[in-house]
Length: 365
Ligand code: AMP
Image (cartoon, rainbow, N blue to C red; front, side, top):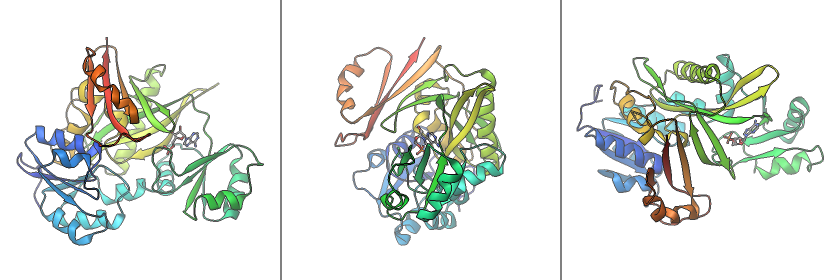
């Protein structure tokens, strides 16, 4: 295995070929690295900007081994790769973040147990493997509650809210999920959703970007505002401290995002962790123009064993990042003509509804 730190000219392997992989590859190229992207789809957006590509399945042990042996370090842009794949990659190259960090965070049950285990609050939750478990969990947590698949959920897929006792029988609800292992969560009456995007390196250094506020539309991130408006400085600092403790406990190397609910009640502001993304994150896209080091450059630095960059925000009072979803990307020409709008398009062919086609960042003075 190649010793750390990597030298410019080394090859970074990226597993996953979406826009996150594409933007990691662009940042890596900026530091004189070569990138080799491994992804299952021939038209992966990251393939367009990589020196080498392998089109292969996430369980093709032979292709994955050849890929890992051809690179100096490996990272991933997507957390739904099997644990066995991560182990195989780690046997053949330095893998960051680790297979343990990946497997804890890719299952909502182990993720929430881990977070509670280090003394950080989440929504109350119960494991649900049978319709009887569901009945007991609803009894324990009350309504409303959110039923989710433990794995492979993203952008609100694989979940539903149960609001009324009369909402169909437990067997029918359970059957909707096709027998997948589930988790029931108590509903958190949040005021806003926030996230911390941060990096940790192997020597334990930690650097967090400013707290983000995230607005979703149809379960998909629509808008990120930074710094999160209406949140006290103490709460913003507490959010960063939560992310730091999580990164430390995972012995994490790379960029991670911690999504949190902000609850406001008589006692003031409280933070409840929703989930951890063991990768660069959509709510960190604003850092490309809005911070001294982008989340992608920061991730490359961490996984190459390089010093972390300054995560400080630039650009006046605030930064706003809007996703361009589906047909919204058709407005690209107008955005190019708008002074101060930074347009990013991911090179995806078909603008299907709900598909993230690009984003636009505006620095607000
Ligand atoms: P997730 O897939 O866990 O990120 O959930 C997607 C979205 O559903 C979140 O961004 C929240 O808006 C909402 N949500 C998820 N879990 C809960 C919960 N326990 N209470 C309230 N809202 C939730």
